[in-house]
Image (tube, rainbow, N blue to C red; front, side, top):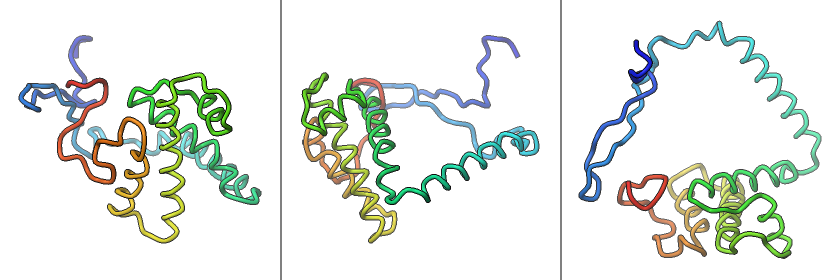
Length: 170
């Protein structure tokens, strides 16, 4: 295989029509992968991961409340997820916003990240009453888009058209 030839194990791009234009869409390879994954070769790494999960599980058992562990994780995840959508907010900006201090980034960006936190916490609480379901996902989506840039995008409803990451056009 030459250096310039694409590696088909990683997937491929195909041209497809979207909204009256032709765009390139990524199509991953079918499962299971060929060649199959050599689990025996991964045993050392799997063992390390299992031990790390065990330590994490042990630490969380020592916490008086699950929320203490989830607090920063949820916020960090919210910042990273919203950055995919183009926000410029940082974890520090979000924490300052939550303590009603002066924010360093545009308030809309921080409010959007704050909505991610609210939706995730709401979903975790609702999982005590509901199974993971389309209803729960719609409820979380409605909270996510309750204010800010997404308020006019049918909060709580599934998208009826294709979307993409990285701008307003494919």
